Each structure stands twice: as C-alpha cells, then as structure tokens.
Image (cartoon, rainbow, N blue to C red; front, side, top):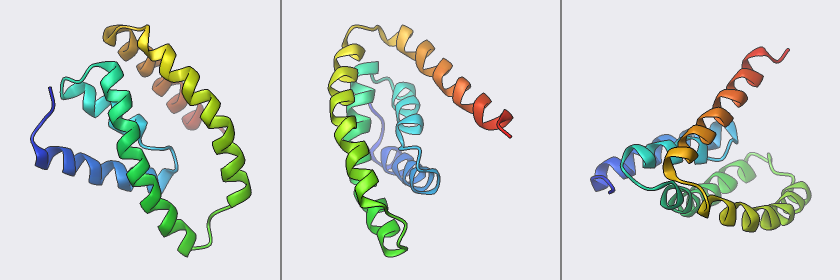
Amino acid sequence: MGGPTWMLVLFGVGVGIGAAFSGLGGGFLMVPLLLLLGYSAQKSVGTSFLAIVVISISALVAHNKLANVDYRAGILLGIGGIVGAQIGARLVEGISTASFRKVFSLILLGLAGYLFFRR
C-alpha cells in the first residue's frame, strides 16, 4: 500500500492545480489515485481529506488575494458540510473497496455527463 514519496508529492501537485482551478475539491482526483496505489476505499477517502485540508488552505489564500471568496456563503456551506461529513464517513465504512470503486465511478461519469451535455 502506498507509493514512493516523490509520486505522492507529484500527485499532490496535480491535484492542487486541478482543485484550485476547478473548485471541485480534489477528492475526485485524489481518491482514484490512492486506489490505484493500493489503498482501501476507506483509507483513500480519509487520506484524501487530510491532503485536501492542506490544499484548500493554500487555494483559499490564493483566491482571497484575488478577491474571489464569499466568506458568508463558504462558512454556511461548511456548517452544512460538517453534518454531511459525519454521515458520509460512517456510510463509507459499510462498503467494500470494490463496491466503492463502482459507486465512485458512476458518480464521476454522471458528473462528467452533466457537465458535458449542460447548455
């Protein structure tokens, strides 16, 4: 499980660019990469969140300098996210890594289809 340090750092750079550019978080990139490195679904999700905290703080600083932050909306979304995160963490515990990969893939395909075909 895991990969060489340089590979994890390189993946982090890519995820940081993707997350700061798209605002999609980073989990949509980080989790599949961790799964490819042999992490379980649960460990991939948990590890991804730690990395996302670090990446998000950096992206927040950069976007704040560009005056691209609505703090009120962000805080309100975060408050709701606290509740959802507690529920989601418990839900992922009850699913196998194989099933998680399928569900995660369907979510990504659905999102991609929505973005592609949206007018």
